[in-house]
Image (cartoon, rainbow, N blue to C red):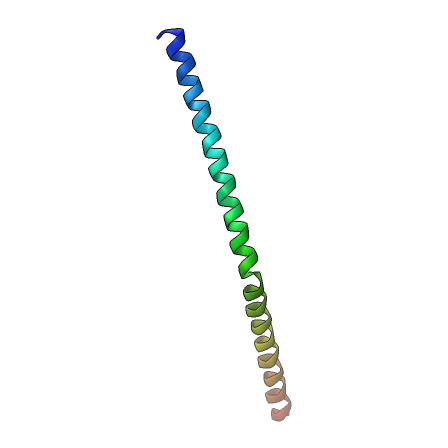
Length: 68
């Protein structure tokens, strides 16, 4: 292999590596935007689930009190 071929090969690999890094950053920024957009929905679902669990627990306590 000639030195010129080796240099061109190294430049090609380096270029592909840099291109991959920029694509990855763009994907991460896109994912962050999607997560931020869904943050309120996730918070609402979590709050609703916690409220349902508390309600269920209090109903069980009332049933236990009624048995005594």
